[in-house]
Image (cartoon, rainbow, N blue to C red; front, top):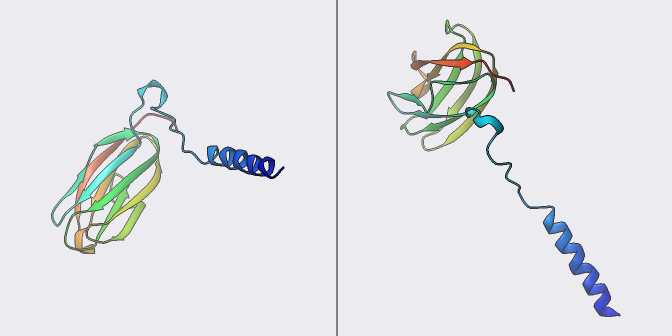
Length: 130
């Protein structure tokens, strides 16, 4: 009878482990544009992997390849209102900024050394839905 208890334990562990696997949903339907933008900040640059994305929730992954702490901002078109930011991204580190953006034109800006005006570029959010 001892083997019955062992068999029940093994089956239970197998079933529990099956619930712990990661499933990959695969590519999104319709070949939608990615909602992730890689940002590389250096002492004198702020390079985005894309200059546009569909409206909705976007993830900006900010990687600091410079020698000083940096910040990254998404601002309205005039640069007057901060819509999202990540601060204190140390050299060699990365942080994510997740922000919901509607269709429109925005300013993406890195601020190496957390001083001055920083390095900015135009980022366009196109029609889309989340």
